[in-house]
Length: 455
Image 1 (tube, one colour):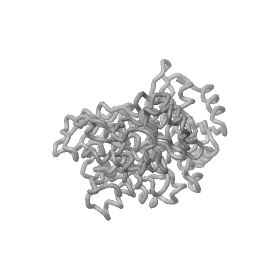
Image 2: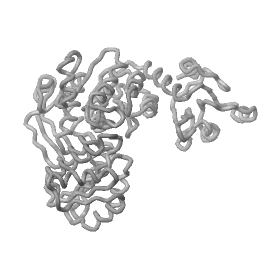
Image 3: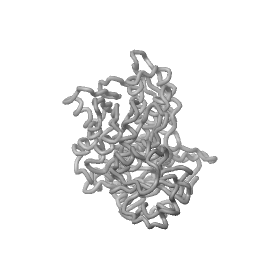
């Protein structure tokens, strides 16, 4: 983009510099500035990146975009070969710049949202899309109002984008959709994540459907096995593509074989039968693969490439990251995030492993509000139903997981600790060779730190 383009879309003021200069790479972290980058100062509740504009220029930035800075004449003299743009609000400027960048590309953009499974679905879809198009995808969990615009600003010669969209409240997906302008939207499911903020699953559905607001021609792909999405589809069948296992769908899995570290199934894709092996265990990954099949079909990707994309995809770290240690212990690190639905899926996976003992190391699920006690107790009941050998709960709300398991009849080998370190020390004292241990909690519990110590 040219400086003058940025000035136009942000209504910014050029303090020093040439408006015909081209700006390519954008950063919000002075510690990671590369030569020639454009630094954008982000002001948060506890941190103001605008105060570091000098550091950015000293570290090699070509330009800075800032708000609320009073420039001194000696500063301007020191950086007279640089570019300084002042805007009223850098967050709004970020949105406008990313929206402008997106408008320069006539490419497929797949936007993905849902209560659980967004990142793993993004990973598998992106790998399928990449079989035909050079593809830019959301890295890690950069799925919010900062991460998504900065992802779009990385666009260069890519021919497609796969973008994850997260939210905690109404209006957030709407903002992201209007910036990204998806050509295809995916909703993985409607569960209970953030129900404490939104009040009901009906409201969660409304918030997720905001993904349609930035689309010129609505083209939605949904998990038809999810009760809320299935009911929505029954009432609004237009422009909706479906995938599923239980309910009749456009793409449906048959002949499913669930193995410990993989699954196989067949489906009809592009009017031909396709046999696929998913390189990660668990039925929920079969659903992710079906979604990727549908995206591939919509984009005209041939079956051999769809199959290759699914069978070679790799998960983002901390999501069902499975390692086997020398003593045969299997560690399942699924500690990035947690909701009732993702807890249930992970426990079902653990229960089906062949290890002689299964241990669930579970922690608090956050942002559940008044539903917290009920949903944690439901997790405990899932533990009991799956005959998990040992349950270790860590955290304030995790005591309800303990209570739920006991109420459902699991009275032995059930433990609760307020402090996660105490729980971890207990775990280390009871581990035996060939155990299978799953770590699962909301990101704020930082269970992944414990996994690192165990490794």
